[in-house]
Image 1 (cartoon, rainbow, N blue to C red):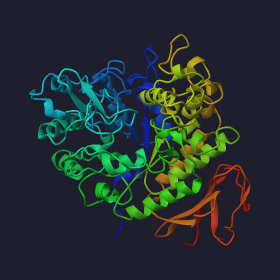
Image 2 (cartoon, one colour; image 1 turned 90 degrees about the horizontal axis):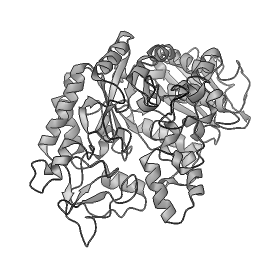
Image 3 (tube, helix red, strand yellow; image 1 turned 30 degrees about the vertical axis):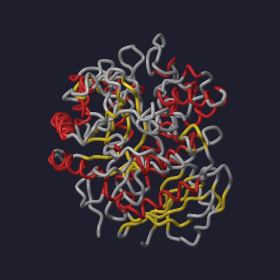
Image 4 (cartoon, rainbow, N blue to C red; image 1 turned 90 degrees about the vertical axis):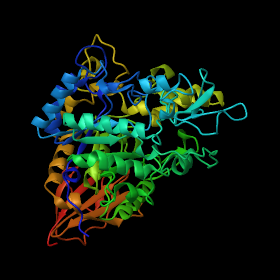
Length: 555
């Protein structure tokens, strides 16, 4: 079966985390006008689809993923008129916009929940999951993604409500048809405004196992996979969403998929399923997470990453599609996590970009990766803003870990690493906001040497490497739809694979290490070097973090 060709397979996503992109009005918070001011920069880079993290009305307990009004723009980001200008500005540049939609939970300050908690007989009561306690405590032992119990006692009625994330993010009850109809109206509102699709937050969690039995899995990852995700009605809900709303528009949908494994991936994205276009699977992003999650680190290696990519390629075949990414707003900066952000920052950032842009799947670039932005080094717990980091600090310290040790882990794995402001230039605050303004979260101290202005002035920068690869991908069907064959799957340092389609083929050669590594590709005679992160080298020995893309001839 030939792969079905679609525009959303051929284009590249760029994620904007609005709070940290560009401040235009001096309040230290990125906003819509700030994004508008940088549209030409995004067009120059060569990305096609802007994924906008939530800009809805929100009390910001989880930076906008706790929505109190799905139809309103949060004033700190701007107005609906400014949003319309942003959408038009993108469309005028032949670019698209997808919204981040959150239907697993709302804010506890949403009018539905405020009504729901008033009494047990409220008409909104079953918009959420309310349960009586058990043995003087919560209904079961479920734990929140952000630490502590997933249940919160509400004194008004003496019952507990479910919140898989923050206690200010009560889970919506999609068992209730009224809730699903409300969701359909929200989707229609934004699609009728002209948005080009949705990134669906934790969509794998929207159907609950209503027996609410205790979770006895050995790790939190297994709890997510076997208890919270892939619930009994999840596909029914997504199909209903597709049939009722999504199928009526020429859009793209990508679901965030915690707990979606290769065994069930096609159930969400199979071309004949009528559900989602693609998913962000998270298997490689959860590598290194121990039994208690991201702040409980365990060893992993590059072969683990390679095996996950292969498993997902095999699982999707020609029927399904995924997005390829190595960082986003929920994980550490990719050059710090998967590269070497000190001795070989530029080389490893370029290598990782080649990986993302030459795999099968729709690439997704997180803001700042195109200039090789790195993790930060916080010195004090007060520097963090992320609710997850703050909650787990309290939990781990209570269990005996020192704050010093926790900060060292958070500086490696914490979500705030990716949320520091974009470094536009070498002026105070990195040009994100004026020197006299205080950004909502501290700017990375390396902004004077790593910034957009510097990158644009250097033809050898990470930015221009991304730009060239983006151009190459768009003009090479084999890099989009082609088969993928691993040439060297077992090497600790090498990643060598081929992309081929009909009479076009490419060879990707990556040295994922600080070492000089020999590579045996001399038997492949008919090839030309298309791009490398070192100057036109053709030897059999790869320099540290060297990446080469060859075009194969006589295919």
